Amino acid sequence: PCVAKVVSLPDGVTVVPAHLITAFWAEVRTQFAFRHPHIVTLHGGYADVDPAAGGVVEVGTAMERCDGG
Image 1 (cartoon, helix red, strand yellow):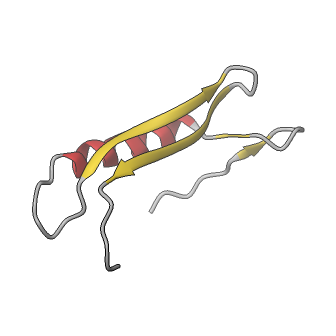
Image 2: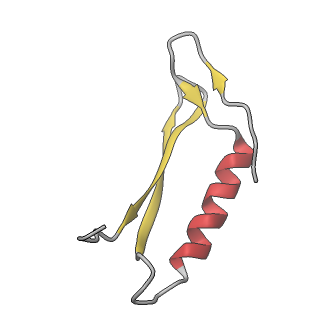
């Protein structure tokens, strides 16, 4: 498990530490390689960079929508 401290900025914006960004993209690449009817399809990932905050402030993925839970 990856345990990290997220740095809080005065205005409430947080910057994601670089080692977590690296781990995030490794996970995206791994999950992107899976194509199976019983695994939710990953379409891609994103990182929102805010130069004023000093780095990446949000990461996320775009995944297949599945009905029925």
